[in-house]
Length: 185
Image (cartoon, rainbow, N blue to C red; front, side):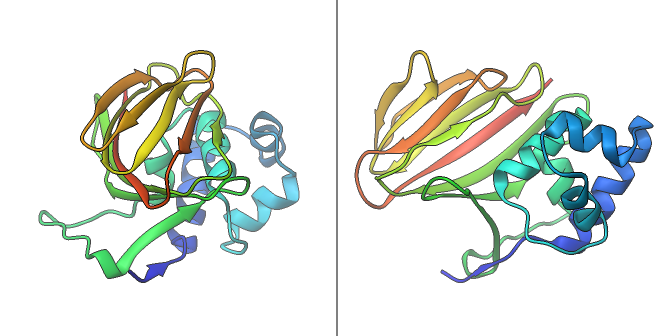
């Protein structure tokens, strides 16, 4: 499966749009996200290669779902070919997420495919308030959920948990992948 990198131009436009909508300065958004102002400036200029952690932190700082920063507008019919997916990689874990579909207001429902390999857990910071995650394991075994009460799931298992608390994703066997639907209220 071929993977393309993040859609930098769409991310840049979304970051500028959401920051301006919120009436925040570059400095304030960078401070809230815990990133350097220069990093945010580069991203808004359409340069750089943001990690999934950076984009999640920016979404939380701006009060918007991750998908609102990375998903360009689409037509009425949307097909995401397996060999043309836009995939975002974690900095500190063998974890990748592909946004397949982003929902609309009032409640957003974003659909992702996650691939994970054993060796390092993806520790996720809380998402925007009211977020709920729904996970179905398609292959392998996965430890996931709130960091203070993770659960183990096998192929075909489903779980849901609050996404607005610290949580984790950890593959327990090679070749683990899952479908994640994230709700934002």
